[in-house]
Amino acid sequence: MGKVTVCVAVVCGVAVTAAAAVVIHRKMKKSGKWVKAMEIVKEFEESCRTPISKLKQVADAMTVEMHAGLASEGGSKLKMLITYVDSLPTGDEKGLFYALDLGGTNFRVLRVLLGGKDGGILKQQFKEVSIPPNKMTGSSAALFDYIAAELAKFVAQEEDDFKPTSGRPRELGFTFSFPVMQTSIASGTLLRWTKGFSIDETVGQDVVAELTKALERQGLEMRVSALVNDTVGTLAGGKYANNDVVVSVILGTGSNAAYVERAQAIPKWHGLLPKSGEMVINMEWGNFRSSHLPLTEYDQALDAESLNPGEQIYEKVISGMYLGEIFRRVLCRMAKEAFFGDIVPPKLKEPFILGTPVMSAMHHDTSPDLKVVANNLKDILEVYFDLVNLSSFSVIIIFLPEFLVFPSHSLRGFLSMLFGIAFKFRYGYF
Image (cartoon, rainbow, N blue to C red; front, top):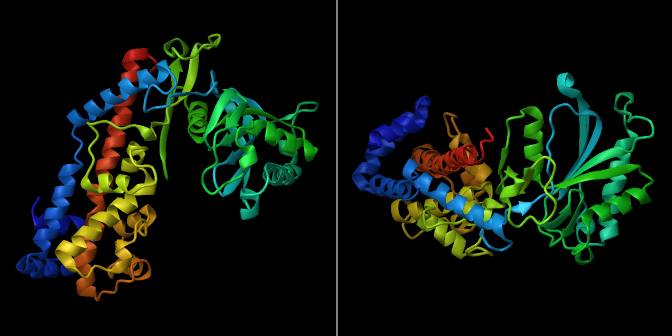
């Protein structure tokens, strides 16, 4: 793709920006800065290309790891966790159900009224609650009592439509997005806290039992009927809406997948086979890595400098937590080699100063005066430009995510399809 074509493609539809980009292109062509900038972009593009042949190699490598993870604990980079979920919603469910989603500094409580096959979701309500910092580092009872108290307030606001059947306790699904060793469909031992939580006495305890005791202290009649993580919850929701769904993928701050496996295909399962003949597997695929996985110099440097080098490689390549940082690293090199020389803006050197949402916002800036780009450069990086010089740098800022995000979208999109196709031929689920 030629440089002029690049300018037109990036700023198509924004006349003022296009005009500025043409001017800058002509000026920078003479200075060689544009050429150097495009060399860096092209090099980055080439290093993270994912043609179909490469995707097939990655998918094959993942399948090998899946087999190993199903065979034994610790036998693979993929944990392939048994969730004890052996049946998923059919769409025929009726009645009142509650949900508690705890996975960070906020938690959500929700109630939903299901109307069966023809009714679907009749009505739903939810509330989001912030957890005070002292509850995140205090005692186990203090944390779960706080959650139970907020849940009790939410239940107290039930409208007549949401009243449960007389004599039947309310059912609660508990989404708990922290590392646990699941021991049944409704029990699991906390392995460790993450995301700013630090309550030592909870580690090694059954989190469902802790929540149940707190509910009892509130005098709340509610039974925790399922403990799942967000990926399994997503799969259940997808299955409720469409009976053909057998795989769920989380693409957010982190990344993970869950799917429906044949129980007989899980050698490490030692219990009685479930009547359904199926078991939902939580892959924990963020830890996947392979020599076939395309890693750029920026990916490798980020991993080496991370708190967990050599771990969660797949997640570091594709998830929202890291894309903004990779973007910053590419920009930092371009700033030094093509734009500013040795005088690189100090803020641009700070790891993780550019989050993925900021990158996305700048990428989608279509304002004539590039206000979003300018404001972020000023507020976050403390870099100030006049309109002409802003246009030169913003062309790169708007253009670069095309190569940063699209290859990773391509990788996870095609890989997900190949992943699904592999199950189609191996298991005949679809």
